[in-house]
Length: 88
Image 1 (cartoon, helix red, strand yellow):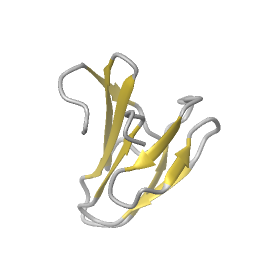
Image 2 (cartoon, rainbow, N blue to C red):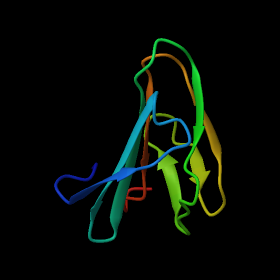
Image 3 (tube, helix red, strand yellow):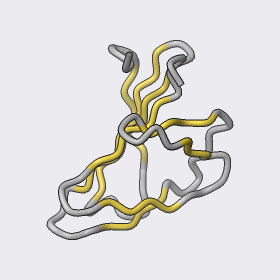
Image 4 (cartoon, helix red, strand yellow):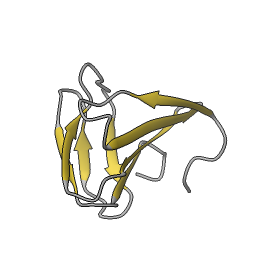
């Protein structure tokens, strides 16, 4: 299942005026959430944020590699949830 509890930490994006991103960590599990709070599609990245483990988009099951910087695009009002939980 998804991570419950754990420590919350805001993640800075290169588009913080429109994107709110954070991570929650509990033991070896990590969930990253990014929300587009604007009325338009937005592209963003997490400058300086890298993670060696692979993530999974919990909605599409797409594997996401954050070992190097990556750009994401979210439509207006949409969000993404990435998980490193053991249920990958």
